[in-house]
Length: 296
Image (cartoon, rainbow, N blue to C red; front, side, top):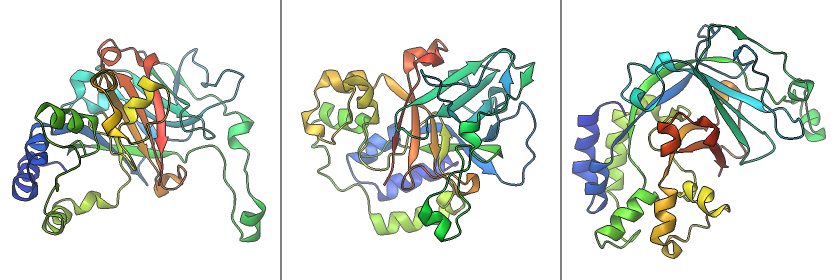
């Protein structure tokens, strides 16, 4: 959703108290990242997949033990200067995102300020080797590698709101003496019809985004995984004020979705979420980034 006035109109017309008041006060901007199939990939520009354009002296990231990580995307920060989130990020340089295809919590992000001298390292054979199962061979499946298809990236402003499963909404309900998850959210039929007409262009696009609100697949509260160091079980009633406060010190840096244009699927139509403590983001300390994934 790009139009703030239109988004506010829909919420005022169809949302119910208390979520209406909460949503109107928590509209957050982000940059929607779109796989631009057919677009030209230029060295040093933002892109998904392929081989990263790494700064001089930087090697392909790997896990302890030497396992190479799969490259997801690079984002040239000069390309987001016209968006309202720019003040949260450096004015120039490149953000890089990698992950381990065999894990839901091993991701890697780093920032390079100087990208005047870039090189493309040769990918490790462990990433380029084609794999296939006996069933895939039986049905003529061509197999897969651990590389993401290289596709150009385009960007647009996107406005969204935290869901009813978010920690922000839980905190709002407790502070205002509302029962969490006990109220209808909106006039679903009318709201969905109206929203579909407004935002039809984005309904079937994969949801990659930089900053802003993350869109969970199952239970929210992903930030709690970095506080408790274990998966959140969805039992919001057991969370105390300290846990909520500590978890809300983390914010979304980058969300990567499954995407047929990238020939990429995380589990069953899943997503990867890269979080960073707000204090680390302010200090440009991207070494603090942690990842978690979820799927249907």
